[in-house]
Length: 121
Image (cartoon, rainbow, N blue to C red; front, top):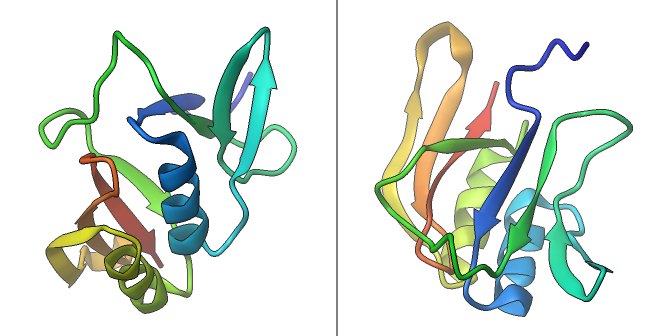
């Protein structure tokens, strides 16, 4: 059994290639374009059995600023990730701020219209 509560996330997007470019730049790691059974998605970087997720175009799920807030680790490179978000059609909604003993976060709007948190210890 996994120790992580979050085991997978689908991040809804409207333009898969644009979203892959955005998330690759912000995370500082390649988001790979994958396909399975005629379905294309962007696989977020992860290792082994770590919690992960993907970028997906879907009729059922649409980008949103009001749904769950997903925190993505950009550990040690939060300032660079914020700059990359701005440079790749993103918008900073809440600048870098301390979240006490849990590190720092910034809340950004991604290239697709999703509100996400970027986190660093």
